[in-house]
Structures are given as C-alpha cells and as structure tokens.
Length: 115
Length: 114
Image 1 (cartoon, one colour):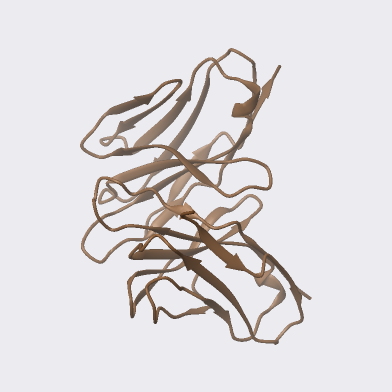
Image 2: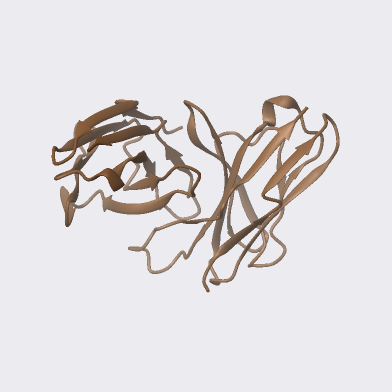
C-alpha cells in the first residue's frame, strides 16, 4: 500500500530534551516536506527536500533540523524543544514529475506536546 | 515571501446549498493552487487544484476559479452534503527550478446542516 508513515503518532516530552520524528514514504517520491498545524494558523511549512541531500527552509524553520540521507526518509529533529513547538506535525511527499501532478500525500500526523 | 489569506474562517450552509471559499495570494510568481480537505482527526487530502494557465476547473460538485490579475482563487462546492463538512485549506506554490515552497491559507471550517 502506497503511504507516508510517521512515528511516533503522539509524544509528550519536556523542554530541552532532543527528539526526532521520523517520516517514511514508499512511493519513491523525490519531494518531501514537514508542516506544523496550529489552530487559526493553518498549515505552515517547516522544511522541504527536493531530493537526497537537498533541503531548504520553509516559512517556520527556527528550532528545527532535517536531513535527507535516503530518498524514502525525512526525519524532523528538535534539538532543544520548547513549549511553543507544541503542535500537530505532518509529513508529506509528492513526485517531482510529471509536473502537472503536484498532489502532496500526507502522513497521519504526530501530535507533540512540550512541557 | 508568499502570503495567502483565506475567508471565511467558518461557514455554515444548509444541505443542498452552495458554499464558496475565497483565497488571495501575494506573490505573482505563484503558479499552482491546490485545495485540501481535512476531516476531523484526519490528514489533509487534495480535492482539486488549478494551475496559473487555467481560469477554471471542475470535478463533479467541486470547482475552482482563478483570477491571476486580482491574485485570488475560489473553491465552489455545489449541492453540499453532510459529508462535505470539514476544514478546507487553500495553498499557493511556485514550481520554479529548486524553489518549491508551499504556503497554505489558515483554513475554513465548513459545516453542512442536514
């Protein structure tokens, strides 16, 4: 089954404790992206990646890191989480070609609470 | 950077009526405008999209219109049904070489009253 998976789905942590949220897709998509969703603010892009070893900042990259060492995986790293990073996080992927089809496929989401 | 504004934030309609959600964008370089539907507790899913070289696109009860000059685009849902109740997000992006940022609107919560 073609899908985007995220782990963990729920996480409660404390300020300053490094954490990683994993994202994996099995559709051989070049493009992957991370978003956070907050009430009243919609979805905001954190980072995206056009392909292996190619990443770029979205609109809200502060406090986050990413890496893309393999095509299927795009982990989101919070080196020192703070309460303002409490949010619902979505990973998404899509193929770069054909250009006409830009649909992003979203993972199930990770609800993160930072105390 | 791109800024996308979406209105209204909430919308209630009677079943069978039409619903219209509007978005404006700021970056004239944006050339791709998708609409996503997010049901409660679920992930966003694409329902329709439009490119800047097209003025209108329809898919059954759903249509999207784009006015490049005014930098606004709209989602139209006709003959609404209770299962249309969800949060709808518009977005704008630019497919230009390595520039692939996507900016979403803040969402519209649509409630279809049976």
